[in-house]
Image (cartoon, rainbow, N blue to C red; front, side, top):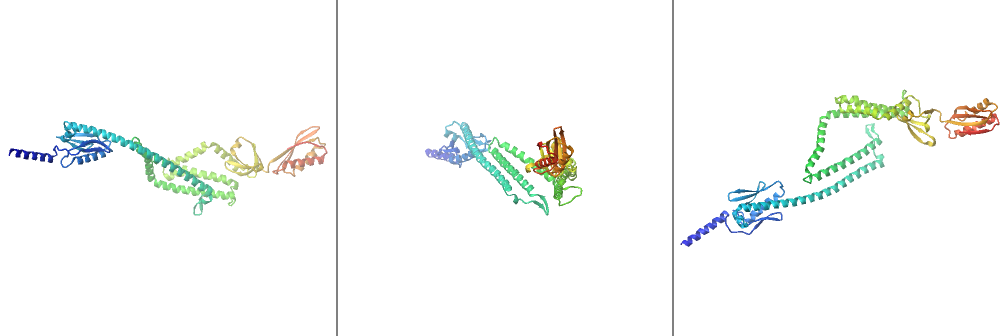
Length: 490
């Protein structure tokens, strides 16, 4: 009877221990892992959770904790149990049965050992993950660098092709017209398209380089903070500019209308004076050859005056950027371009003073030729051999200008034996050379008892003027006297 009661009590105790999870019966060990690394093992179930289920839950929590580098491993004692945490997330609940199965004297020692193992495993796995991430990031940087270089090269080639296409087929670029008024000529529009294509190419390449730099810096933890700074340095000025632009829309609209009116006026003035230069429009107060210079002066003065005087009225700010730009432009033209201004002032004096006209023969230092075109800053002359030279007016400040309206002055020096009748000889020579050119002159250089040396000159642009002059003078001298000619130098 007593033995039967003891057996019943033992069975009830075993059942109670099994229900409460304190049973000593060991299950098959279940390993808690971090990725492929074993950390610790569990051999006992707890409540309704088997050892395998407990190990699986702990493995999942530790796998998620690898990516959370700020999560720390710690333990917390709760009565007879010890809870293992990673950050604020519980990993596993350890008890005396787990400690006994692992060979530790108590659960506190076992929990401390598990804590150290988890810390070491997480540190090792995080280091491995960081290394793999760094290698992957470096590979992406290399890939993105190749792509960026390819895009930069492609954009540059595209810009060059557009510019080459414009240069090879200029006839395909039409003028910009407003009804019947030509705002931009085909050549100006071509130049604008060429410059625009080059500028867009540079902008596209800079944007690709900027995108590559931002992506590269964002891939590494140590440089990720610079991404926000770089993006802020790029976007904040643009956002501020966009805000100011939106607030200035009425002023911008007024400036756009004023700019269009100025463009139309300048274009109309240019076309008007061009028609004057071609002779299509006759002006009593302006000669056709002065029209190009007058057009340039008037259009430049219109632009500067609009910037200085009209812009403050349109914007309502007398100290605005446009007014300051106008004054700066005026100062730059007046001070920074002194040689150009000096050349223009000399040109204005020659042009409007009518000191030199198209068709005049001039000699300026080593240059000599017939004037074919008079500009504001220089003149164009046609010299011997049909060579064209552009001579800046600034040279007139250091060289003497000789103007011959009829043509170049041809001069020959002759030496005769002393004639018996000097006056008749010189008169015959003068009449003879008058047939060669205009403005004939005979000047006695030296007269002795044995010889006469004199100079003869005419104004003529004939190719063989010197030879004709010598021939005419020799024939006239032989008619007067039979004395031979000793020397004739052209």
